[in-house]
Image (cartoon, rainbow, N blue to C red; front, side, top):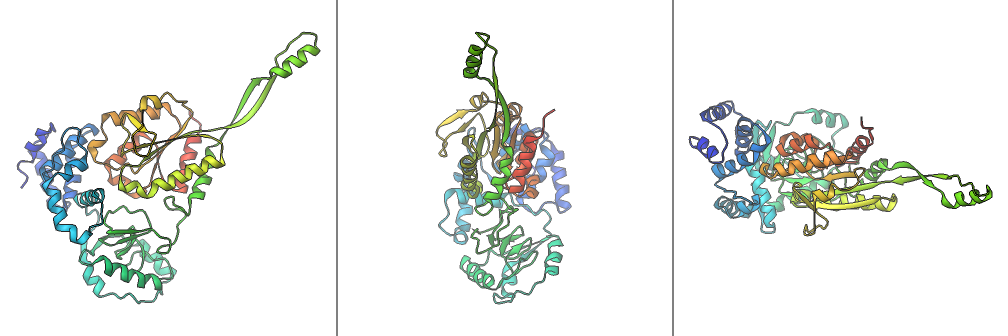
Length: 439
């Protein structure tokens, strides 16, 4: 089945032999491989021995399994767009997705499907059957005990709603929303979390509607973030409603410093009174000294919901606390430079950044998820240099923490720079870490 796979890996200078095939087949026999995304994860564990191999491995995977050749200097999206595999996928799925999606949206949907894994999902249910057996006019009678019980259930099933139209989903969502009176978890009907309902977040509903939350499963057909659809959670990833709570967390990075200066006027005045005996008079002043570097990943659709609110957070911070704030941008990862404008035209090298005062607080905001080959050696070296120079540095990640372990690049970056959730609580933990006295 995969007889030519070792040869393909050797083309990309990855040292493998037939044993890799045997291990892959064992994984399949044990039912560990159900999707092409599972193949990627299993092979990665077998083949990749160090971070430097991730780039060649990813290129070989796309070439062999998807016939997508990533040329030297190529962006992954460019390689995908010119491939016949993507064009065929687009033709087969355009009716389901509609014609209002941008090119970037289509590429990301394609990647979502390519890398979708089954994880703990043991059974895929027919969403159309669930839908036909359900009604939109049920009255909300769930008690708190029911909510706690369903929240404890392990999510081991996924519902596939791809046979339903967007119009059908939206129409019934309105019916359900009109009758919902409480929070729900683990079910298949209400707007909730952790279940197989076609609306909610944190569950497993392919081609459903993500309502609230920040995603993670990459299955939703449409995202609805309006407050009327879902209650506001102050412990969630920062948004317009909890930005002030995040601001309060950031306030903890204000550092009071004492400064001693020669008070020349007083020295002269007292010296004249002493008949020419000038003794230096020192004055001590306290000031709030704060310097902040903010670096935001603004290069992909997964970060779009967070860029504006992050900018709002730090802009509010600047108006409320006097400090020096510099904002830079990057796409997916920091290589040898960042950009001072959101269009990423005006660049500043990492070398220049490293000449700044090491007392700067550095906040890097990004989901840390990218194609493995993008996190190359120069990028890793930049992060190491920044961590070495700026002792107070933190990475704020908008992806739910429970999904970090599923993304290789996130785990690599997490080892290089302290990583925290982009939530009021996560920011508070980051600030506490920055304020911790260094040995």
